[in-house]
Length: 211
Image 1: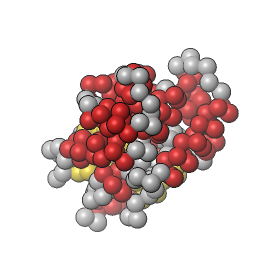
Image 2 (image 1 turned 135 degrees about the horizontal axis):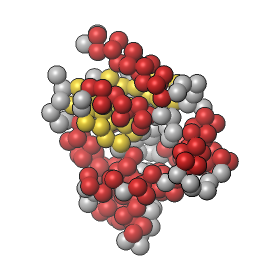
Image 3 (image 1 turned 60 degrees about the horizontal axis):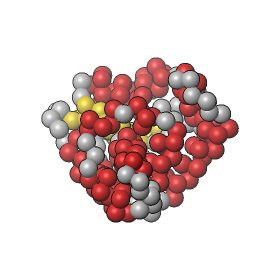
Image 4 (image 1 turned 120 degrees about the horizontal axis):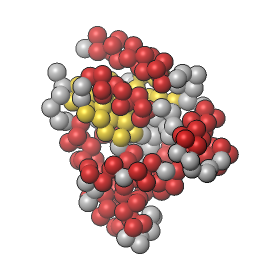
């Protein structure tokens, strides 16, 4: 059976860690689609472009290759904020759509996480989960991640960044972040990674049992 699982939600909700573990559990591929937009923003800036420039963004999106997604710089807070700017551009989203759908359609299936997987990229996914957590919980997680890497950022700055990105992602005209009508909801505010994984697997098993 080809299994496609869509994991959506805001930044630092835990969807990436969850998606990776679910993919490992089922032995299928995983794609953090947010890295695609981060890579586009990185490449636009590297070429001296403006993140709001439609042509520069579209060109960078069409040139993205899988090998470039391992760049550690894509995990920083600035990369995330820049990504949410280029992600507003419909032409960028359209250019990356084929990449994502091709990835999802590979033999055996895949797990994809992002903002619009269940609504736009894979509307026919077998399982759709929308992961949420409070703003404060997400900011704390980001703060601990950056502390562990020795990066000097403050909790207040991260909280403001998360709220700014949420507003941008939810308010954009092209593929705004929202839960698919048939998505299963998972709030990870009070859950550690193991608890979140167990809760997600219960949702998945219940859903797949009905197919």
